[in-house]
Image (cartoon, rainbow, N blue to C red; front, side):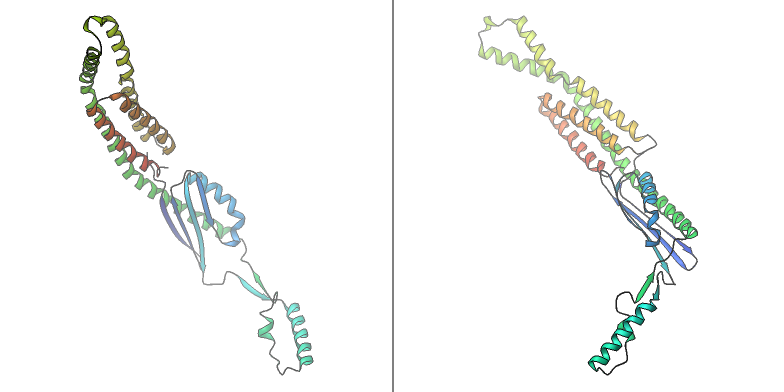
Length: 290
């Protein structure tokens, strides 16, 4: 099967007075590149989530955002009474020394360092269980998106491989005429450059056979057709094999290039160019296959 590397998934759940939302999105990348944002109370679960996400999502530039909205404050402030008393005593003494006519110290004190302590929300196992379930739901939606995109890509890939095979079939009838044209051209060139009686026909046939053997494209056609079949077989496997298909595409490119180099025929070259065009479009799609 073919799965897209890009995707999007979202899930929302309620937990008491809190709303938990998870967003997952990804772009294509050669490797797994994860950006993970979680509430500070659950940072100790960071490595566990990264391991699970890398296993489930495999590849891509992935962004995962976990957000918790609550009608209650996530962090509570607590007045540090000892610090406030010290600040008050010092400000009062300074006020008397400078003869400043004010007794309003509290607003100033509360803005001074350490006067207020912010209490972080504590880890909650039940809440974490709900976060994990919401994350799983988001991943399910995310993978469904990838699968859907992959089906469109698979259809396009099959059409382009079919086009390559069709062009390959069009080359086959031209093979016999190409060989005869090469033989005739060599004979004509030899006649122009040497006396008729000086031509050794046996030697000429040996040289022509050697030359034609070097220009024979049968092996390239067989290998290219084999790569096309292997391409289809790999797409039909239950898992997405983007890297493996990429390697097959590289091998197809080598055979097409060699076929073009050996062809020495304008009509065959036209079909080779069309195959190259289809292969380039396949390569563009390959950049986004998981």
